[in-house]
Length: 93
Image (cartoon, rainbow, N blue to C red; front, side, top):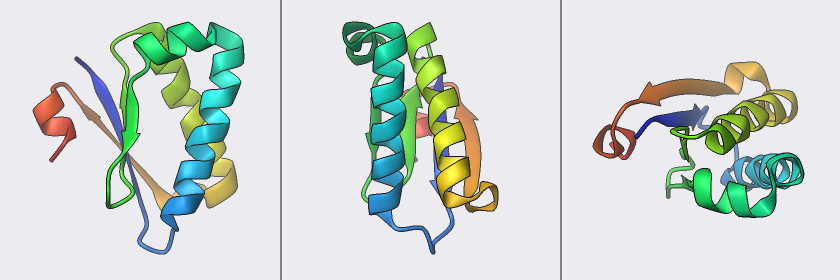
């Protein structure tokens, strides 16, 4: 599995991260379909506000791109750090 992991500056509220992910997921649900998004784009926000998106399939890749765009515009590009991980274990550290 391939994951994109998004970390945020400590000044960014987890609610703002959650809102950006919801907007991106709604947009991508309209593009790739809700079922594809649910089946192929696993994602979560951990307790520290780090976002993990499974990018193994095209729907997850689309969600990761949309989330980065939405989050960059709403939270500021300087507030986001993107990390690509190849395993579930690495993505959850």
